[in-house]
Amino acid sequence: MNRAELQRFDVHDPVHGRVPCATLLPAAAAAPLPLCFFLYGGGGSRDSLADVRECLEQWWGSGELPPLMVATPDVGPWSFYLDDPPRGLGWESFIVQRFLPHCQSLLPRGTNAAPLRTGLVGISMGGYGALKLAFARPDLFDAVVRFRRCSSRPSTPPLFAPATVITIRLRCLAHF
Image (cartoon, rainbow, N blue to C red; front, side, top):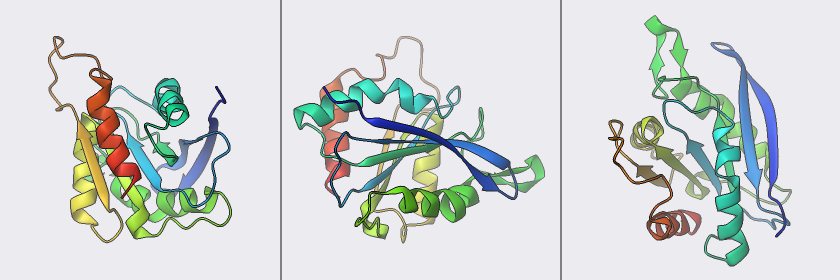
């Protein structure tokens, strides 16, 4: 199986300074590709994208998931992807004003992540952020998927079980 290309980089933001970010592209990705923001849960980081890499590679390799660029910013723990100036948070603005244009510039040449080709996938805290962004900016995001509630119990099944449910949802996102 060909490895997907994982890139780690920083994006400058006037509120947060250097923001660690990452993208994942399927091996031999051809244009045009949709762009999907992966918003992780409260304990995650940009390395959360590396944690789901193998699963995405399997889905891309089997054809269960069409190719798309997956990107995530490192917003720190429990930020909920909010703009909250009293707490020094400006993550919603960062995603829309800095991260989205940066990721669009990284797409393989000849692609265009126009507003109807950009989606959000969020897990737990990231699900809250994905829904908030999608509802606040329907002009920018055409698809949104939320997994797990913010208060999951320890008895909740693992993140990728059952994989078929997530595969169906991601496949729908990839075809938006």
